[in-house]
Structure formats: structure tokens, C-alpha cells
Image (tube, rainbow, N blue to C red; front, side, top):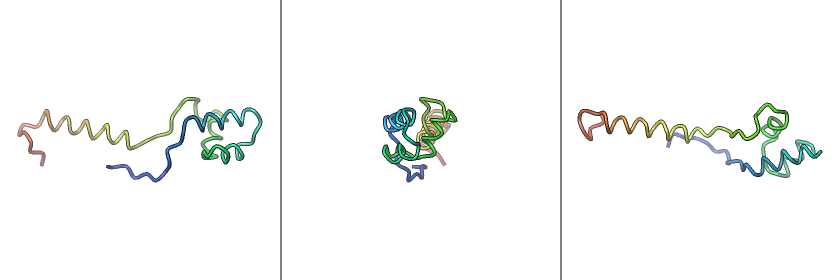
Amino acid sequence: MFCISVSKKLSDSDMASAVSAVVSGISVRTAAAEFHVPKSSLSDRVTGRVKPGSTWGNLCKIYEQVLSLVLYFFLFFNPTPFVFF
């Protein structure tokens, strides 16, 4: 649709496991490689820059919500039915 993203969806369980591993003593670099998560994202979670339980952005969902609202207004508030342009 409007989303142009080539990044892989990160697993919440992988990120949680990586954070636990770092807290238990493994380095951020090693944990990131072992659990296949980005090192910078893992570091942000461990240092507290990103709050626990927060999710990373997914603009596709935002665009889908905006598009559904636009379609809703076109369908229900358009004075000429089924003519959009």
C-alpha cells in the first residue's frame, strides 16, 4: 500500500531474551548477534532510552488507519454516492 519497508519484523520474545542475556552479563554485541536483533535497539532497551514493553514503529499500520478513515468519510459524507473524484 503506502508502506515502503524492507526491514524484518523483530520478535518481541527475541528482544526480551536478548535484554535478559545482557542483564545477566553477556555483552550487548554478543547478545544482539546471538538473538538476531539490532545492536542499537538492544542497547537502547538496556540503557533505558526506550521504555520496557514499548514497540518500534510500524508506519504501515498508521497509513492503513488513516486510509480507512479517509474512505469512511468519502463513503458516508460524499453528497454524490460512489463518485470520489
